[in-house]
Length: 383
Image (cartoon, rainbow, N blue to C red):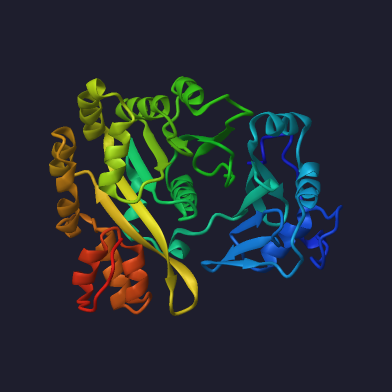
């Protein structure tokens, strides 16, 4: 499927000049080429600092001088339309996508800060990583088999949520005939039609908001709805309704555990509405995957640690009865159903030598419990 938006420009990375120095007229493409050569996932342009990339779990400056605020503006202005420039001046923030022919897409956030305009760029490969390459639990592929219901992939910024969902949709595209509609801000991975017919809608270009897009998407006969992020009450409410009425809804939240994810969904609603939402969520929820990327000691790459929950009758009852504090222990004892806590996942990574105990303690949601699981007896300060 080709990029659907006229303002999305293209770059053949093989034609990009070498990144030696940054001049007032240096194009954005040179910076992307430098980030690509480092194998980076992110690029930051901040005035008074050199362009900085995130590669193999570390922030590293590119070997060029610090940029001035004028140089940041000169780099990014050529990729913007007149409408985008006006919006950036008016609001101080702008999200957009940018496509490169030989590599893939970038998700860009431009924002004003004390020293002037800055840019945060996420580099998204053209080829969707295979599920096997992501090193996720095999049970995650069961998400693509659900005929309906709500599936959430959660975690912090940069923890691979979008990549995981893209791999699930790609698997679904190869194994199941379905009509898939994605609603994203902006569109990240692009999908070709396979066994599925896939439509991709970008907020701001194809629809003014997630809520508006979701209200109309239910009339477009989708089987699967991919929502880039549940950001507000209207989006959450419509997603729950879609999941209840025979659609498979795949989406993300910025939460770090299953219990926190359930609480966040319920807490966006006013107190008088929450009992109804708990009932609705208990009926429609299918699975939650929480993931955090940790450093793989064997090859200096990143490997996910995961908390994985499938909605069993006991978990549905706990959600409905407002007893979400019981969910963790249900996951902990639910290995037969394919479930695991984050701490169990981290413990396994330590035992197989892929991450250090210190890395596990830093990533754990409950460091004290993690210490006990690892048999650590040395003192540790917990904030």
